[in-house]
Length: 434
Image (cartoon, rainbow, N blue to C red; front, side, top):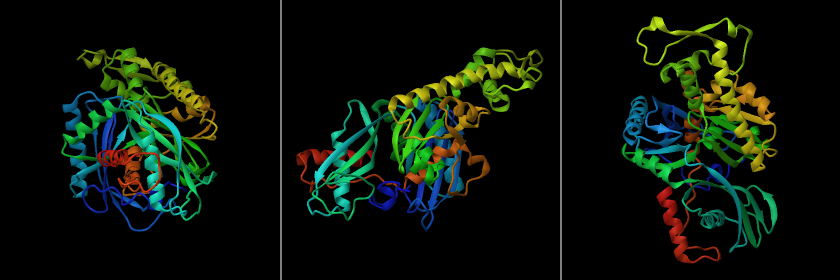
Protein backbone atom coordinates (compact mmCIF):
# COMPACT_ATOMS: atom_id res chain seq x y z
CA UNK A 1 0.00 0.00 0.00
CA UNK A 2 1.23 3.48 -0.81
CA UNK A 3 1.05 5.53 2.36
CA UNK A 4 2.53 8.58 0.69
CA UNK A 5 5.88 10.22 1.19
CA UNK A 6 6.14 9.41 4.89
CA UNK A 7 6.06 5.63 4.54
CA UNK A 8 9.06 5.76 2.24
CA UNK A 9 11.15 7.97 4.48
CA UNK A 10 10.94 11.21 2.49
CA UNK A 11 9.55 13.08 5.46
CA UNK A 12 12.36 12.47 7.90
CA UNK A 13 12.37 10.85 11.32
CA UNK A 14 9.23 9.89 13.22
CA UNK A 15 7.80 12.46 15.60
CA UNK A 16 9.04 11.64 19.11
CA UNK A 17 7.43 12.24 22.49
CA UNK A 18 10.76 13.39 23.88
CA UNK A 19 12.52 10.00 23.93
CA UNK A 20 13.76 8.16 20.83
CA UNK A 21 11.25 5.60 19.61
CA UNK A 22 8.49 6.80 21.97
CA UNK A 23 5.35 8.47 20.60
CA UNK A 24 2.51 10.14 22.52
CA UNK A 25 -0.97 10.48 21.00
CA UNK A 26 -3.77 12.58 22.49
CA UNK A 27 -7.36 12.24 21.30
CA UNK A 28 -9.43 15.12 22.67
CA UNK A 29 -13.09 14.26 22.11
CA UNK A 30 -16.43 15.45 23.39
CA UNK A 31 -17.12 12.22 25.32
CA UNK A 32 -13.65 11.11 26.36
CA UNK A 33 -10.03 12.14 26.31
CA UNK A 34 -7.58 9.34 25.55
CA UNK A 35 -3.79 9.29 25.62
CA UNK A 36 -1.72 6.49 24.07
CA UNK A 37 2.03 6.19 24.51
CA UNK A 38 3.54 3.88 21.90
CA UNK A 39 6.95 2.40 21.26
CA UNK A 40 8.18 1.90 17.70
CA UNK A 41 9.39 -1.68 17.31
CA UNK A 42 12.03 -2.85 14.83
CA UNK A 43 10.96 -4.29 11.50
CA UNK A 44 8.52 -3.31 8.77
CA UNK A 45 4.86 -4.09 8.14
CA UNK A 46 3.22 -4.57 4.75
CA UNK A 47 2.26 -0.87 4.69
CA UNK A 48 5.90 0.19 5.01
CA UNK A 49 5.58 1.37 8.61
CA UNK A 50 7.26 -0.10 11.66
CA UNK A 51 5.23 -2.13 14.16
CA UNK A 52 4.02 -0.27 17.25
CA UNK A 53 3.49 -1.44 20.80
CA UNK A 54 1.16 0.54 23.06
CA UNK A 55 2.95 0.81 26.40
CA UNK A 56 0.82 3.44 28.13
CA UNK A 57 -2.93 4.12 28.06
CA UNK A 58 -4.91 6.77 29.88
CA UNK A 59 -8.49 7.84 29.31
CA UNK A 60 -10.80 10.17 31.12
CA UNK A 61 -14.38 11.41 30.79
CA UNK A 62 -14.19 14.57 28.71
CA UNK A 63 -14.98 17.89 30.32
CA UNK A 64 -14.89 21.36 28.84
CA UNK A 65 -15.16 20.07 25.26
CA UNK A 66 -18.17 20.37 22.98
CA UNK A 67 -18.25 19.41 19.34
CA UNK A 68 -14.52 18.72 19.52
CA UNK A 69 -13.85 22.36 20.49
CA UNK A 70 -12.69 23.72 23.84
CA UNK A 71 -15.52 25.53 25.67
CA UNK A 72 -14.07 25.49 29.22
CA UNK A 73 -10.29 25.83 29.27
CA UNK A 74 -9.84 24.92 32.96
CA UNK A 75 -12.06 21.82 32.87
CA UNK A 76 -10.51 20.55 29.63
CA UNK A 77 -6.99 21.16 30.96
CA UNK A 78 -7.69 19.10 34.08
CA UNK A 79 -9.16 16.20 32.07
CA UNK A 80 -6.17 16.20 29.70
CA UNK A 81 -3.72 16.22 32.60
CA UNK A 82 -5.42 13.21 34.23
CA UNK A 83 -5.44 11.18 30.99
CA UNK A 84 -1.80 11.95 30.16
CA UNK A 85 -0.67 11.28 33.72
CA UNK A 86 -2.34 7.84 33.71
CA UNK A 87 -0.64 6.94 30.42
CA UNK A 88 2.76 8.15 31.70
CA UNK A 89 2.45 6.10 34.88
CA UNK A 90 1.60 2.96 32.92
CA UNK A 91 4.41 3.51 30.42
CA UNK A 92 6.97 4.57 33.00
CA UNK A 93 7.88 7.51 30.78
CA UNK A 94 7.34 11.25 30.77
CA UNK A 95 6.23 12.83 27.51
CA UNK A 96 6.81 16.37 26.29
CA UNK A 97 5.45 16.28 22.73
CA UNK A 98 2.06 14.94 21.69
CA UNK A 99 0.18 14.41 18.46
CA UNK A 100 -3.41 15.61 18.69
CA UNK A 101 -6.62 14.80 16.82
CA UNK A 102 -8.73 17.64 15.45
CA UNK A 103 -12.48 17.15 15.20
CA UNK A 104 -13.43 20.84 15.38
CA UNK A 105 -13.05 23.83 13.07
CA UNK A 106 -15.24 22.60 10.19
CA UNK A 107 -12.61 20.72 8.16
CA UNK A 108 -12.66 21.41 4.42
CA UNK A 109 -10.99 19.57 1.57
CA UNK A 110 -9.58 20.96 -1.65
CA UNK A 111 -7.34 19.44 -4.32
CA UNK A 112 -4.76 21.67 -5.98
CA UNK A 113 -2.19 20.91 -8.69
CA UNK A 114 1.26 22.49 -9.10
CA UNK A 115 4.21 21.96 -11.45
CA UNK A 116 7.86 23.00 -11.31
CA UNK A 117 11.04 22.35 -13.33
CA UNK A 118 13.44 19.58 -12.33
CA UNK A 119 16.93 21.21 -12.12
CA UNK A 120 18.92 17.97 -12.34
CA UNK A 121 16.49 16.32 -14.80
CA UNK A 122 16.29 13.39 -12.35
CA UNK A 123 13.57 13.52 -9.69
CA UNK A 124 15.13 13.40 -6.24
CA UNK A 125 13.83 13.60 -2.67
CA UNK A 126 14.54 17.32 -2.39
CA UNK A 127 12.62 18.01 -5.61
CA UNK A 128 9.48 16.38 -4.21
CA UNK A 129 9.84 18.04 -0.84
CA UNK A 130 10.07 21.49 -2.41
CA UNK A 131 7.33 20.74 -4.90
CA UNK A 132 4.92 19.86 -2.10
CA UNK A 133 5.99 22.92 -0.12
CA UNK A 134 5.43 25.10 -3.19
CA UNK A 135 1.91 23.72 -3.38
CA UNK A 136 1.35 24.56 0.27
CA UNK A 137 2.44 28.14 -0.37
CA UNK A 138 -0.22 28.42 -3.09
CA UNK A 139 -3.02 27.43 -0.69
CA UNK A 140 -3.49 29.89 2.16
CA UNK A 141 -7.22 30.16 2.95
CA UNK A 142 -8.15 33.21 4.99
CA UNK A 143 -8.92 32.51 8.64
CA UNK A 144 -8.06 28.82 8.31
CA UNK A 145 -5.04 26.67 9.12
CA UNK A 146 -3.78 23.93 6.81
CA UNK A 147 -3.73 20.60 8.67
CA UNK A 148 -2.61 18.33 5.84
CA UNK A 149 -1.04 18.61 2.40
CA UNK A 150 -1.21 15.04 1.12
CA UNK A 151 0.32 14.14 -2.28
CA UNK A 152 -2.23 11.95 -4.05
CA UNK A 153 -0.87 11.88 -7.59
CA UNK A 154 2.42 12.79 -9.26
CA UNK A 155 3.26 13.54 -12.87
CA UNK A 156 6.52 13.81 -14.83
CA UNK A 157 6.33 15.73 -18.11
CA UNK A 158 2.51 15.48 -17.96
CA UNK A 159 2.58 11.69 -17.56
CA UNK A 160 0.06 11.25 -14.77
CA UNK A 161 -0.76 8.48 -12.35
CA UNK A 162 2.76 8.13 -10.91
CA UNK A 163 2.90 7.10 -7.27
CA UNK A 164 6.62 7.51 -6.66
CA UNK A 165 8.51 9.55 -9.30
CA UNK A 166 11.91 9.42 -7.62
CA UNK A 167 14.61 8.30 -10.01
CA UNK A 168 12.59 9.23 -13.10
CA UNK A 169 13.92 11.68 -15.69
CA UNK A 170 12.05 14.64 -17.11
CA UNK A 171 11.89 18.39 -17.59
CA UNK A 172 9.19 19.16 -15.03
CA UNK A 173 7.37 17.41 -12.20
CA UNK A 174 3.85 17.96 -10.94
CA UNK A 175 1.80 16.91 -7.94
CA UNK A 176 -1.86 16.94 -6.95
CA UNK A 177 -2.21 17.82 -3.28
CA UNK A 178 -5.16 17.12 -1.04
CA UNK A 179 -5.31 20.15 1.26
CA UNK A 180 -7.28 19.89 4.53
CA UNK A 181 -7.91 23.14 6.37
CA UNK A 182 -9.74 24.07 9.58
CA UNK A 183 -10.82 27.30 11.22
CA UNK A 184 -7.99 29.01 13.06
CA UNK A 185 -9.80 29.89 16.32
CA UNK A 186 -10.90 26.43 17.56
CA UNK A 187 -7.54 24.87 16.66
CA UNK A 188 -5.62 27.65 18.41
CA UNK A 189 -7.74 27.18 21.57
CA UNK A 190 -7.07 23.45 21.51
CA UNK A 191 -3.33 24.04 21.15
CA UNK A 192 -3.35 26.60 23.96
CA UNK A 193 -5.19 24.22 26.29
CA UNK A 194 -2.62 21.47 25.67
CA UNK A 195 0.26 23.91 26.17
CA UNK A 196 -1.22 24.80 29.57
CA UNK A 197 -0.63 21.15 30.48
CA UNK A 198 3.10 21.72 29.81
CA UNK A 199 2.94 19.70 26.61
CA UNK A 200 4.13 20.66 23.13
CA UNK A 201 1.88 19.97 20.16
CA UNK A 202 4.09 18.05 17.73
CA UNK A 203 1.35 17.88 15.11
CA UNK A 204 -2.40 17.90 14.55
CA UNK A 205 -4.29 15.28 12.58
CA UNK A 206 -7.87 15.26 11.28
CA UNK A 207 -9.82 12.71 13.35
CA UNK A 208 -11.13 10.57 10.45
CA UNK A 209 -7.63 10.46 8.93
CA UNK A 210 -6.20 9.09 12.17
CA UNK A 211 -9.06 6.60 12.51
CA UNK A 212 -8.49 5.40 8.96
CA UNK A 213 -4.78 4.82 9.59
CA UNK A 214 -5.71 2.62 12.55
CA UNK A 215 -8.76 0.72 11.32
CA UNK A 216 -8.26 0.20 7.58
CA UNK A 217 -6.40 -2.62 5.88
CA UNK A 218 -4.19 -2.01 2.86
CA UNK A 219 -6.63 -3.33 0.25
CA UNK A 220 -9.42 -1.06 1.49
CA UNK A 221 -7.19 2.00 1.21
CA UNK A 222 -6.14 1.04 -2.32
CA UNK A 223 -9.55 0.06 -3.73
CA UNK A 224 -11.55 2.89 -2.16
CA UNK A 225 -13.34 3.16 1.18
CA UNK A 226 -15.21 5.68 3.30
CA UNK A 227 -14.32 5.97 6.98
CA UNK A 228 -17.10 7.34 9.17
CA UNK A 229 -15.90 8.32 12.65
CA UNK A 230 -18.95 8.68 14.88
CA UNK A 231 -17.79 10.82 17.79
CA UNK A 232 -19.65 12.45 20.62
CA UNK A 233 -20.00 15.97 19.21
CA UNK A 234 -19.28 15.45 15.51
CA UNK A 235 -19.45 12.72 12.89
CA UNK A 236 -16.51 13.01 10.52
CA UNK A 237 -15.78 11.18 7.30
CA UNK A 238 -12.78 10.54 5.10
CA UNK A 239 -12.45 8.88 1.70
CA UNK A 240 -9.33 6.83 0.99
CA UNK A 241 -8.31 5.82 -2.54
CA UNK A 242 -5.05 4.43 -3.91
CA UNK A 243 -3.55 4.48 -0.44
CA UNK A 244 -4.26 8.13 0.36
CA UNK A 245 -6.96 10.22 1.99
CA UNK A 246 -8.54 12.15 -0.89
CA UNK A 247 -11.50 13.78 0.89
CA UNK A 248 -12.37 14.83 4.43
CA UNK A 249 -15.45 16.44 5.99
CA UNK A 250 -17.53 16.54 9.19
CA UNK A 251 -21.13 17.11 10.25
CA UNK A 252 -21.87 18.74 13.64
CA UNK A 253 -23.99 15.87 14.96
CA UNK A 254 -22.80 12.97 17.10
CA UNK A 255 -23.54 10.61 19.95
CA UNK A 256 -24.10 13.40 22.46
CA UNK A 257 -27.06 14.61 20.42
CA UNK A 258 -28.68 11.19 20.81
CA UNK A 259 -28.04 11.35 24.57
CA UNK A 260 -29.57 14.82 24.77
CA UNK A 261 -32.61 13.65 22.79
CA UNK A 262 -33.13 10.83 25.31
CA UNK A 263 -32.70 13.17 28.28
CA UNK A 264 -35.20 15.68 26.91
CA UNK A 265 -37.68 13.15 25.59
CA UNK A 266 -37.82 11.10 28.79
CA UNK A 267 -37.17 13.96 31.26
CA UNK A 268 -34.21 12.16 32.78
CA UNK A 269 -30.74 13.38 33.83
CA UNK A 270 -28.09 13.32 31.11
CA UNK A 271 -25.98 10.79 33.03
CA UNK A 272 -28.91 8.37 33.14
CA UNK A 273 -29.69 9.04 29.48
CA UNK A 274 -26.11 8.06 28.53
CA UNK A 275 -26.39 4.94 30.68
CA UNK A 276 -29.67 3.93 29.05
CA UNK A 277 -28.22 4.48 25.59
CA UNK A 278 -25.23 2.30 26.43
CA UNK A 279 -27.15 -0.53 28.15
CA UNK A 280 -30.45 -0.63 26.29
CA UNK A 281 -30.05 1.64 23.27
CA UNK A 282 -30.65 0.32 19.78
CA UNK A 283 -31.58 1.76 16.42
CA UNK A 284 -33.32 -1.47 15.41
CA UNK A 285 -36.78 -2.39 16.63
CA UNK A 286 -37.44 -5.93 17.88
CA UNK A 287 -40.70 -7.75 18.76
CA UNK A 288 -39.80 -7.84 22.46
CA UNK A 289 -39.35 -4.07 22.76
CA UNK A 290 -42.96 -3.47 23.78
CA UNK A 291 -42.74 -6.00 26.62
CA UNK A 292 -39.31 -5.03 27.97
CA UNK A 293 -39.58 -2.21 30.52
CA UNK A 294 -36.80 0.24 31.43
CA UNK A 295 -36.53 2.28 34.63
CA UNK A 296 -36.23 5.99 33.87
CA UNK A 297 -35.27 8.22 36.84
CA UNK A 298 -36.87 11.63 36.56
CA UNK A 299 -35.01 14.93 36.65
CA UNK A 300 -34.94 16.36 40.17
CA UNK A 301 -36.47 13.26 41.79
CA UNK A 302 -34.59 11.81 44.78
CA UNK A 303 -37.01 8.99 45.46
CA UNK A 304 -35.96 6.10 43.22
CA UNK A 305 -39.28 4.35 43.81
CA UNK A 306 -40.97 7.08 41.78
CA UNK A 307 -39.01 6.23 38.63
CA UNK A 308 -40.92 5.94 35.38
CA UNK A 309 -41.17 2.62 33.58
CA UNK A 310 -41.26 2.79 29.82
CA UNK A 311 -41.14 0.12 27.11
CA UNK A 312 -37.83 -0.18 25.30
CA UNK A 313 -39.59 0.67 22.04
CA UNK A 314 -39.87 4.32 23.15
CA UNK A 315 -36.10 4.50 23.62
CA UNK A 316 -35.58 2.98 20.16
CA UNK A 317 -38.04 5.51 18.73
CA UNK A 318 -35.86 8.35 20.05
CA UNK A 319 -32.51 6.95 18.93
CA UNK A 320 -33.42 5.83 15.41
CA UNK A 321 -34.51 9.19 13.90
CA UNK A 322 -31.40 11.02 15.14
CA UNK A 323 -29.08 8.29 13.84
CA UNK A 324 -30.84 8.31 10.47
CA UNK A 325 -30.54 12.10 10.28
CA UNK A 326 -26.81 11.91 10.98
CA UNK A 327 -26.21 9.27 8.32
CA UNK A 328 -28.31 11.15 5.77
CA UNK A 329 -26.16 14.25 6.34
CA UNK A 330 -23.04 12.14 5.78
CA UNK A 331 -24.52 10.66 2.60
CA UNK A 332 -25.44 14.10 1.25
CA UNK A 333 -21.95 15.49 1.95
CA UNK A 334 -20.39 12.49 0.23
CA UNK A 335 -22.57 12.82 -2.87
CA UNK A 336 -22.09 16.59 -3.07
CA UNK A 337 -18.30 16.19 -2.92
CA UNK A 338 -18.27 13.92 -5.96
CA UNK A 339 -16.17 11.31 -4.14
CA UNK A 340 -19.05 8.89 -3.63
CA UNK A 341 -18.01 6.74 -6.60
CA UNK A 342 -14.30 6.97 -5.80
CA UNK A 343 -15.09 5.58 -2.36
CA UNK A 344 -16.45 2.39 -3.89
CA UNK A 345 -18.93 0.17 -2.10
CA UNK A 346 -17.10 -0.08 1.21
CA UNK A 347 -17.70 1.80 4.48
CA UNK A 348 -15.81 1.35 7.73
CA UNK A 349 -17.68 2.63 10.76
CA UNK A 350 -15.57 3.60 13.76
CA UNK A 351 -15.67 5.85 16.81
CA UNK A 352 -17.72 5.39 19.96
CA UNK A 353 -21.04 5.75 18.11
CA UNK A 354 -20.20 2.76 15.93
CA UNK A 355 -20.84 0.50 18.94
CA UNK A 356 -24.52 1.45 19.06
CA UNK A 357 -26.67 -1.53 18.16
CA UNK A 358 -28.14 -1.08 14.70
CA UNK A 359 -25.67 1.60 13.56
CA UNK A 360 -24.05 -0.72 11.02
CA UNK A 361 -27.38 -1.85 9.56
CA UNK A 362 -28.70 1.69 9.15
CA UNK A 363 -25.44 2.85 7.59
CA UNK A 364 -25.63 0.04 5.03
CA UNK A 365 -29.23 0.92 4.18
CA UNK A 366 -28.88 4.70 3.94
CA UNK A 367 -25.51 4.78 2.12
CA UNK A 368 -26.30 1.65 0.08
CA UNK A 369 -22.84 0.24 0.73
CA UNK A 370 -21.26 -2.70 2.52
CA UNK A 371 -20.35 -1.74 6.07
CA UNK A 372 -18.10 -3.15 8.73
CA UNK A 373 -17.25 -1.83 12.19
CA UNK A 374 -13.54 -0.97 12.35
CA UNK A 375 -11.18 -1.03 15.29
CA UNK A 376 -7.41 -0.62 15.64
CA UNK A 377 -5.40 -3.28 13.82
CA UNK A 378 -1.64 -3.98 13.70
CA UNK A 379 -1.06 -2.69 17.25
CA UNK A 380 0.52 -4.70 20.04
CA UNK A 381 -0.33 -4.18 23.70
CA UNK A 382 -3.96 -3.08 23.32
CA UNK A 383 -6.35 -4.62 25.84
CA UNK A 384 -9.89 -5.55 24.83
CA UNK A 385 -11.34 -2.56 26.66
CA UNK A 386 -9.11 -0.09 24.80
CA UNK A 387 -8.94 -1.88 21.45
CA UNK A 388 -12.47 -1.05 20.28
CA UNK A 389 -13.77 1.47 17.72
CA UNK A 390 -13.81 4.30 20.29
CA UNK A 391 -9.99 4.24 20.43
CA UNK A 392 -9.27 4.15 16.69
CA UNK A 393 -8.29 7.81 16.46
CA UNK A 394 -5.80 7.60 19.35
CA UNK A 395 -4.17 4.50 17.87
CA UNK A 396 -4.05 6.06 14.40
CA UNK A 397 -2.14 9.05 15.76
CA UNK A 398 0.64 6.70 16.80
CA UNK A 399 0.91 5.45 13.21
CA UNK A 400 0.80 8.98 11.84
CA UNK A 401 3.91 9.78 13.88
CA UNK A 402 5.91 7.82 11.31
CA UNK A 403 4.55 10.06 8.56
CA UNK A 404 6.51 13.01 9.94
CA UNK A 405 5.72 16.38 8.31
CA UNK A 406 7.67 17.76 5.39
CA UNK A 407 10.43 20.27 6.02
CA UNK A 408 12.00 22.50 3.40
CA UNK A 409 15.10 24.55 2.91
CA UNK A 410 14.43 28.28 2.92
CA UNK A 411 16.62 28.65 -0.18
CA UNK A 412 14.49 27.56 -3.17
CA UNK A 413 16.64 25.45 -5.46
CA UNK A 414 13.69 24.89 -7.76
CA UNK A 415 13.09 27.57 -10.31
CA UNK A 416 9.61 28.60 -9.21
CA UNK A 417 8.01 32.01 -9.58
CA UNK A 418 8.30 32.94 -5.90
CA UNK A 419 10.76 35.20 -4.11
CA UNK A 420 13.17 34.06 -1.41
CA UNK A 421 11.27 35.92 1.30
CA UNK A 422 8.16 33.87 0.70
CA UNK A 423 10.16 30.64 0.89
CA UNK A 424 11.56 31.78 4.23
CA UNK A 425 8.02 32.46 5.44
CA UNK A 426 6.96 28.99 4.33
CA UNK A 427 9.87 27.43 6.20
CA UNK A 428 9.02 29.42 9.32
CA UNK A 429 5.32 28.46 9.03
CA UNK A 430 6.20 24.76 8.76
CA UNK A 431 8.50 24.94 11.79
CA UNK A 432 5.83 26.69 13.84
CA UNK A 433 3.06 24.27 12.85
CA UNK A 434 4.94 20.98 12.76
